[in-house]
Amino acid sequence: MELVDTHCHLDVADFDIDRDQILARCRQHGVNRIVVPGIHAAGWDGLITMCHREQGLYPALGLHPIYLDQHRDKDLVELEERVVRHRPLAVGEIGLDYYVESLSKNRQQFLLEQQLDIAQRAALPVILHVRKAHDQIIATLRRITVHGGICHAFNGSLQQAHHYIDLGFKLGFGGMLTYERSRKLRRLARDIPLTAIVLETDAPDMTVASHRGERNSPEYLPECLTALAGVRGEEPATVAKQTTQNALEILKLS
Image (cartoon, rainbow, N blue to C red; front, side, top):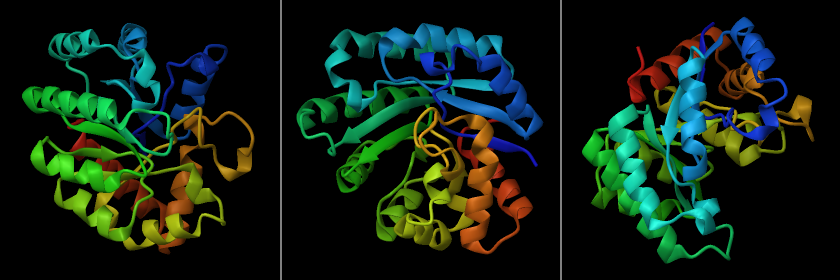
């Protein structure tokens, strides 16, 4: 079974000691494509270099809302320059994070809209980070239309899920599905159309239950697949085929 990890921060220092070995194990498990989203301007060049060097790694470039204090207005100019020059797979990871109360909502909104404009001009999908701000993101996407994308680590309501789907988005599910206590999330994964779901790990964060307390890794993506198939009562091969097709379609991968 071929799988796509649609969200993995493989460029961060957590993987410096064993990145090559992880990639080898990923390929053994059928995880042949990994999307690596950027989070701040300082990391973009290294991320691009890594993805060019390694087959099956695909860059996305963006300014993550959590790192708000690191972002400067000039980063937006540099982002558009790199998007034009390197043609990443998507603009991301971008979005709104209202969970962290110290982050300026106005500044987040400004950066989000500017990056959506960049994605719109480049005809690229976006990779969204959203916490406690789904209604605000959906309203923004209705004003600034983009070429679809992925709402990463989706944890909103079923109604919000359908709003994203209507806007051309897929919804990312990963390691949290492997925890039986994630009852709301597992119901969502059961009730959302399979054609709208993509798999992800968000490594090194949000690890699977079998590695609780440890660094997450893209090689654990098959465990996310098993959990998704289980909550839906479907065959893993069927779920693997459809989620992979969904990822290839939304990210325009061949």
